[in-house]
Amino acid sequence: MKIKKHHLLIALLYLTFSTLFSQDFTLQKLWETPDVLTTSESVCYYPDDHSLFISCINGNPVEKDGNGFIAKISITGEIITLNWINGLNAPKGMGLHNNFLYVTDIDEVVMIDISASKIIKKTHVDDAKFLNDIAIDNDGNVYISDMATNKIHILKNDKVETWLENSEIVGPNGLLISGKDLVVGTKKGIFHVRLSDKKFWHMVKNTGGIDGIKMIDEQHYIISDWSGKVQLVNMEREPIELLNTTDEGINAADFEYIKNKHWVIIPTFSDNRVVAYELR
Image 1 (cartoon, rainbow, N blue to C red):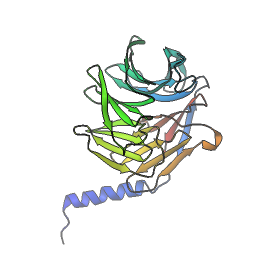
Image 2: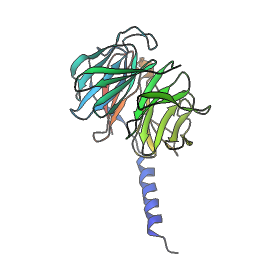
Image 3: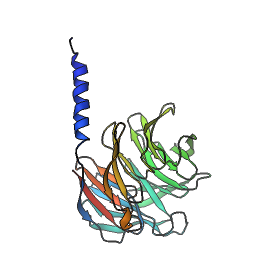
């Protein structure tokens, strides 16, 4: 019996990933910041100057107190500007597009000109209660999760509307764009939603609640659950626990993954720091 070349290639790729994800993976600590990043919720890598933006709630996650800020730190953890942007309420998820930084802030999406270090627009989202993460497609459309209302909104052409509301999508939090799909981390696992027609698939189940989510490739993800656990998950195997600081009372919120370095950079929320690890 002859085996076609493409069948052999598929088998070899499957064997490679099977071997890869049967091995032990660890996160090795690289550095940590001082505990001045008050209620650090999200990390966003800015490749233009290899720096990191940190959203800091600095108070209650749902209170409009004006205490929230965005900090800017170096890729090795030094504080560049602690209060790079001031006057926010409870900033959380962030996304980059065309040298603008977009940030969720309870019921608003804040647009920041990075070059000018200045807020240039705030867009209110009707009926929003807990806007959380952001993902931005190649056309500049901004997708926003609202964990409290089980909705995903879209900011397009300066207007906001509800993009997806479905009983299967419970507690949507972490978002990312993967090709023609929006990847959504929820209380029920990971979903892929096709951007063109909103058809969705439940890709990974039994993950526990998801806060941050990043892709390693089309089938493998790193997720955090806020309480302190970071896992490596895929569609076919049990999750691999990379880190668990739950018992220490150290959270793992909306982390960043720098793919070419294999760095996982975790905001510790109530621990008021950011900690960087290398995935090995």
